[in-house]
Image: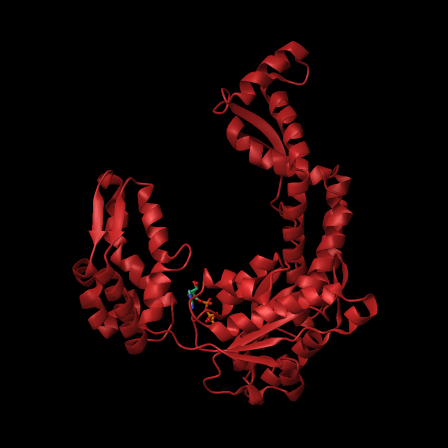
Length: 436
Ligand SMILES: Nc1ncnc2c1ncn2[C@@H]1O[C@H](COP(=O)(O)OP(=O)(O)OP(=O)(O)O)[C@@H](O)[C@H]1O
C-alpha cells in the first residue's frame, strides 16, 4: 500500500500516460481512499466501501494502461477481464467468481515475489552451497570446497556446466480443470494434485543442465521458497487481494443493452451475476474464502451504442464515479511517441543499439508518424494509440531485419523515410486494413 498523495499519484501516471487528466484524478483519489481507510479504526474501516469507477471512452486511449499503472504503483494485485466473455455459450452464472480466484492467484504471485526479496540474502548463501555440491560433490573435503568457493565468487567458474535439481513448475500431465457448471470444483482436483505430489515425496523436481551463472536465478528462487512460510504467503496474499485488489472489467457497455444474445447467457443475466461481486460477497478459493467488499472495480467501455443508464440500476449505483476519456489527437500521438517513459521510439532506439545501430528520429519524422496514425484511425478503424505500434513496426521493418549487418552505423529516420516506407500503403485503405 502506497502513501502517495493524489497529486503524486497523478504525476507518477503522467510519466507513462499522456492526457486523460480526469481519469488519472479519479483513480488517484480511489487509491488514496484506500490508504485513508487503512488509517481508520477497525469498525469504521469495515464500513467504508470503495467508490468504483466507470471509465467511458473509445478503444486504445489509455483506460487499461491507467489502471494497470496504478496497480503497479500501489503494488496491488490486478486483473483485466472482458465482461463479454461471460455471455459466451458454455458459461453459467457463478463462473464470474473465477475473476476473484484469478485475482487471488495474481496476489499469491506478487506476495511471493515480495517475500522472496526478504529472504534473498539467505537464499543466496544456500544457492551457493548447492552450486558447490554440483561442482565438487557433497563429499569433497572442506579445503576443496573452499578453494572452489573462492573461484566461484571471483566469477571464474561462471561458464562451467553443471547439473542441478530444480522445482518442476510444469504440471506434469496432471491438469487442474474446472467442471463446467460447478465453479470451485477445481478445488478438489487441486487437492488431489497436492496429495499426489506429497505422496511422491513433496515437490516435484527435475535435473537441469545449465551453466553456473545461469543456475543462480532458479536456485535462489527455489531456496527462497523453502525459506518462505507458505501459510504466511497465502495469508498475506488473501489480505492483499481483499484490501488492495483491483479488477478491471472491460467492455461493460457490451453487456449493457437489455437485449439478449442468442445462445449464451443473457446480458442482463451477466450483470446480475457480476452484481454480488461488486456489492460484496464471499468467494471460495482453493486458498480459503475471500471477501470482495473492498476490491476496487474499474469498469470500462466505449458506450457508443448503449449508455451507462442502460446498465442495471443496482450496477449503476455501484459505479458512482464516472470519467470520460477523450479520443486522442495528432499532438497526443506525437507526445506518446516521444515523451512517455519507455515510449515506442525509446524502445526501438534501445533495441537497435543492441545491434550497434544508432537510430535517430527527426522532428518531422515524428510528425509524419503521428499524422499517418491519425489518418489511418480515421480511414480504416479507430484503434487509438495502438495504431502507433503497427505503423512503427512497418516503418522499422527493413532496419530491424538488416540491423545485424549494419553494426556501427547511424541511421536517421526523417519524414521522407517514413513516407517511403508506409506513405503509399497508408493511402490505400484496402491494403492498410491488412498491413497497418
Ligand atoms: N493516453 C495515452 N498515453 C500513452 N499511451 C497510451 C495512451 N492511450 C493508449 N496508450 C497506449 O496504447 C495501448 C492501448 O491502450 P489501453 O490498453 O489503455 O487501451 P484502452 O483504452 O483500455 O482500450 P480497450 O478498451 O480497447 O482495452 C497501450 O499500449 C498504451 O500504452
